[in-house]
Image (cartoon, rainbow, N blue to C red; front, top):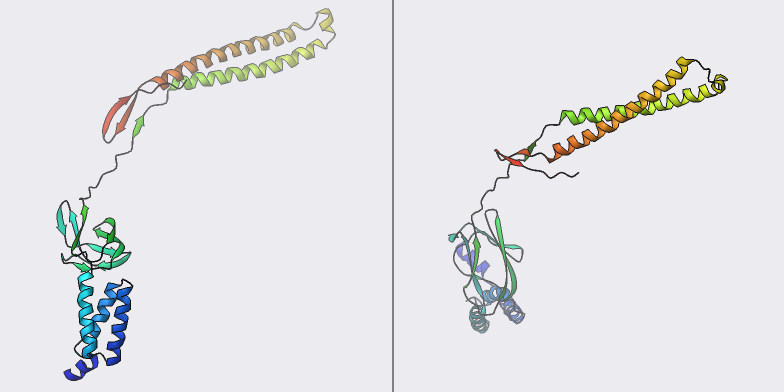
Length: 257
């Protein structure tokens, strides 16, 4: 049974010749790895002596010209075995062994991942460059905690709110009484008594009272508005307490008024 398996695995004459032809083509194209695989077939003792001799000579030439790399990954200067290596975007080494690995000459991109960190290097590999050391340096990752949110403590002032309300109410009262007083005055002037100045004193007093209250309300509103503006400015300019990451400090804000 062992003899049958060995005989079945041995290349045929046609396979030997085909491997020899393919190896020369691959070597000419610069595909050293593919040429190496073909030459290992036609250099087999089962191949005809002429083919085997040529393939053995060519295999030695390919092996002499084949570049090789030794990939090293270090974390804080310490060599790492558990590292994943991609060659031109494809998995090349699942872990590092410290031994050289054959590689085609030309431009390549090496990507090494250790833990959650990844490094990339672009290389130009030369024919016959043996055991080239390619080092990837990593540093221990440090977890940085995000600072606690900043909280600004500032209470809303009551006095400016009251003064602002008084100012609004004063202006509103002035508007209402001014309009109604004007309407009453116009109605009174249309009466016959207006020409002789013999109108009912109570009607005249009512109109005068409306205008007086309107004027007073306007004055109170304007004064309240001025005091409210001053109070708001003082509040905006006052220093406030800021709580940051468990500590309290005082910050002075410049007024925008």
